[in-house]
Image (cartoon, rainbow, N blue to C red; front, side, top):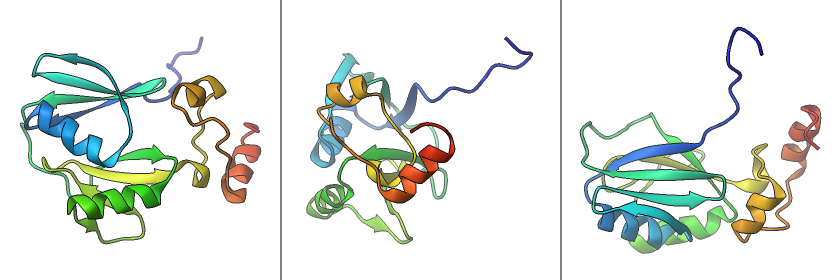
Length: 147
């Protein structure tokens, strides 16, 4: 091991929300997910195979104008339709960004369009086996020796 720790990835993202039940309802209307666990009305954990989102009750800071986190999905057009169905404003720009009811800015990206990759086991657990990559994302992965 070297003098510095090597950055390997992100285990989870924690989001402050006003109410856990309402947050699970909101995110459940937009995304298909499994609940990893819950701590009473204080926290809930949305599973993403080898990663998760921790929802924490009690918003302590202002909403986010540019600070955001990116979620990877198998079908961004389905997310767009769900957001429209729920009456959630899609923010202007080239991506698919929105604010949740507590001001957390979420950016949605599609799995096949980016170099982000999941192990075959994680994809299987998520019910997403067989997802491929677009040529540009495939080239980026190949350039890094990941394909």
